[in-house]
Length: 333
Length: 297
Image (cartoon, rainbow over the protein chains, first blue to last red):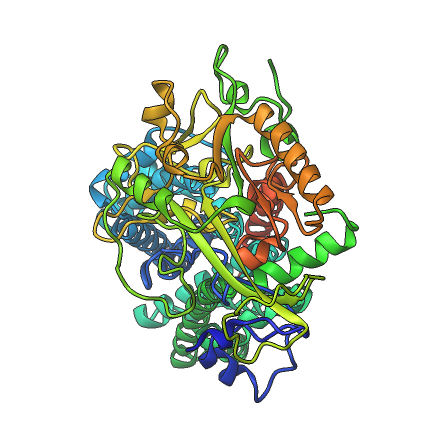
């Protein structure tokens, strides 16, 4: 590159990296004019590891909704569904704890998370949700498997169910409470997307588990309804979110995020249809469960990658802020 | 002194150290970086590295300008931005001096260089501090924001929370690092290493109130001298982060220097986020319960 490449012209210049410039040209409209420091990002990209954190977003949500599902299944006389959901809740929670510790830059210091309770930190609040949740779901699942201390196991399950709802949505606050435009600006819809995705995954797990166990298909009706309803809301809320975000919503349609989210839509929609239409057929029910689980997982990956791309693009940071300054009148910095 | 939740999360806040719990404390200290006198020497970068024992983090050439540092990061706590741009030629008297060939630059335009030493802003409302789950990031008695490296477990939450892209995880170390405003030096009544080393006093250290007055005078003087582009950045306690402890005098839009034009502390919206998350969590439980209605088919 020569210096001339970087000299402003009166009309401004395209400051994007050449590769991005070439990639963006065929199908997109010309982006809003903006200035930047040699096209470099303003923000730092999230350092959270892949697959640790997107998989945790999935497994924690699935576990939370499963914990609620398990107790309702037990209370309504559906022992096989309760068993599957209890094991899913414990498995998802324990996997989440492992993934989050592995994600730390200093895993040996994971207990520092418990030094304080801090409401301004969604990660601190989340730690105090996930820690008791994982202990309670593990106790409930252990009792379920061994048959030891059923009363205590049931009590643990009820405690886990009380934390199940927060488990499904606190992670939405976790990612939206950042400066990343595609995440932060979506804070209204993100809890709905995450909550619905969790419900869809829990329904999917129920369908899959009952199918594998060969349980009476009469038991899987709640799981089928949840899988379908969760998937439908996940799709609708996700679409509404992208639309409302305007230009920033582009990050959910392009690159790795766009590919993951397109896959998620196909999987969730297929799973939802299969769950409703084919739940009485063991094989179809199990396959639908797999599709719903995969759809939920792909949704989390897509949203994660959209955030990375948004942080890396100075346009997402500068253009909305510049528009805000312009609206508030001259004299603003 | 008591504070409302809104005051604690965003908006003007006269005394962040008091908000953090210091009953008695020294005045708020900060930086005023006057980029109109920065010569791009990078003495600040070197002094910071030397004093704070910040490791080397790459000796590459960026190929974009005289800036081969690139950006602030875990191991770059001062970063001198270098911008070369053309502007409409001001009415200048032609002294008939030999000039440097300027390539494709048109006759009615001239080249100008902007140099600016960037640093952690030590925000009044610091998102990195707000979201830190371990308490590693804390507010000092000087109103500055510092990472305690013996507490940080490298969760990385501060990294995407910072609206300026300042703090980062150091590879191979795993912990988050950033400017401490030389907490060790300021505690001993010394000025930070970068300000000490700055040969033009572009970096000025002092009581924030005094620096704000000085900056206002400086921008007025520049306007009178015809430099109408001069403007302050990060000086306003009413801005999205409650004003910066380290603020700047710039000669172009902030984004030209890699700074966000109108940063907002993300935790401003946190009460709304928690409210929605709680409502949706209740909705999730209700949805699961509804799926069991109607009994067994």
